[in-house]
Image 1 (tube, helix red, strand yellow):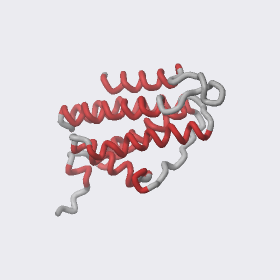
Image 2 (spheres, rainbow, N blue to C red):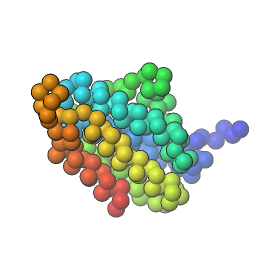
Image 3 (spheres, helix red, strand yellow):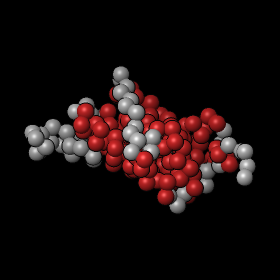
Image 4 (cartoon, rainbow, N blue to C red):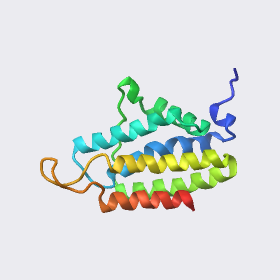
Length: 167
């Protein structure tokens, strides 16, 4: 057993690891606040996103498994009945733009320090988190009937994120 920090085992600095560990929850939050919903729908979106993060602990990628474990250690494990702390950015659009910028930074970081397989799996996972969150609850409609499954603003965030992760 080593006392070496987990991030250094993957070749990252503490700050770089913080970027990689912070992004999944940030993607979840940005996707959830891209369109203002009721508190119930927001909880539904957050629960779906947290479950997607939790599922990544079984990833074939050691990097994604480690990041998912670190995220859940910091935010709460749905398998233990824990819920994600509520984050409500004052400027949802600005928050989403910041998340996309950080995703682009992570793309550059992963290209230089991670295996191609780990990098692709991590980036794909972030887009899956966004997809899961934006598809978790419809917006609009009456008594759960009708409404949009994915709104234009949710789609725009997801598409911007995907582009930042492929550039």
